[in-house]
Amino acid sequence: MSMKPIGLAAAVWLALGAAPQDPLVRARQLYNEHQYEAAAVAAREASRVPELADVAAVVLARAHLECYRASGEAADLLAARQALAAADSRRLAPRDRHDLLVGYGELLYFDGHYGAAAEMFGAALSSAGQAAPADRDLVLDWWAAALDREAQLTTGADRERLYRRVIDRMEPAAEADPPSAAALYWLAAAAAGAGDAGRAWHAAVSGWIRAPLAAGPRATLRADLERLVQQAIIPLRARLPTAGGDARQAAAAMQRDWEAVKEIGIRR
Image 1 (tube, rainbow, N blue to C red):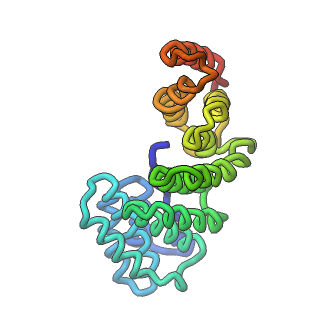
Image 2: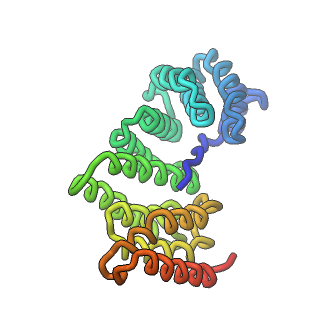
């Protein structure tokens, strides 16, 4: 799935009597509104208040990570690394420690340490009890994406083992009511990555039909499944001996089947 920003903890300082212009509240609000440069400015202001400095460092790091995603500027990645190092986890509330783990996961991902990033996102998933359901689904998406990138750097049994980890984690989430949007996608994608064309096809068909029921960010789920089916699953299935020997004819038949599936999807 397309990587999406994960929200920060709600601005609970207002509930504790903070002024409306509290810089940390403003930084979180700006971040959650996707105004990342402005969020970084507000977070730097908040970091000058000793009792806010550690949480502000987490917000600052996350803002710079999103700026890096948009611009690719190395300075943003360096600023994020410095801000994460400045945050004392012992002084963070559980929800802020969760945000810290997500920040470290994203930093490792952008540094190319995909396996380590997956471990960090896995830890964040275990600490996500106070996170919003949509944010938990986004962390799950990042976790799977990190393992997918790691798997692409390997071959044979190691590659299959990594995709099996994704499948094992996604199956319960995909079978839940409501199903996870990330799980519906990654169950199909991981099966394709492992070379299991049949499972990938069946999971994609089920995911398409159930997409309107999914929990978590689902706006792009069907578009992501469409791209996966066209670019990976149909070509993979068409190459199988059971496809009948003519890959082009097999792909055309599968394309017709896929178009028919899209007509029976559950509607909103």
